Length: 289
Image 1 (cartoon, rainbow, N blue to C red):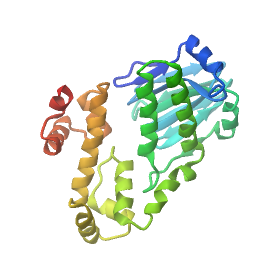
Image 2: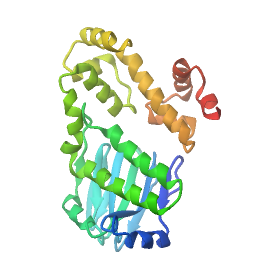
Image 3: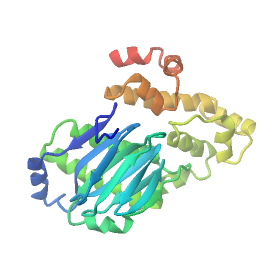
């Protein structure tokens, strides 16, 4: 089975040619802009084949799962927390793993300055999850572009989202500089571990794992954290998860089960109980309200 699109919870925007022509005439953004952008969660059977390639560069950011990208006759496996830029005009194919389907963000981008990203094309690059990796901030940039595009294609919107594109691409091409803002927290064990929690909202973390980030014993770290925040580390981590769940539920594009999965809950009913403990309402009631 092969599917080009049509995945539960997907978001995608393909700009009409008329809109792309407006961008090409806009000197503020016409040297670097996108024509297509989207997010495919758990995209089982996702497959694309372009014998002659694409007119744009294509960035594929794998957030979860795995897949394969083929450039000419070479296969490049891509895994969670990696990205790949497919060069323009080069024949290619890519597909999601059937056993561990990928969740990917993707962008088709072009313009005079797009070719400057050629140095990053044709290879997989890691974005390791560390205490200052700012993965959550990068995903918020995608979300900000999506939210603006949902409001239509006014000139101001097209300018804003394509100016955001520059920052978003820089978060891939200049990873260390993107992370620099978090280095001020280097000596603050609580801030470090909160950053780590934010980068791993889709995972199940134990107290010992979180404490190991700052090289403290679980008991010492737990006392330090609770004295500063008033909550145990795990309670705080659950609150961050539920805060993120509220943002996802507000979008209405994901089912409650999909929201639960994105936050590392395999059991939707357990997720609902955790949500209710924090919010005093069920996810369904929250969305309805």
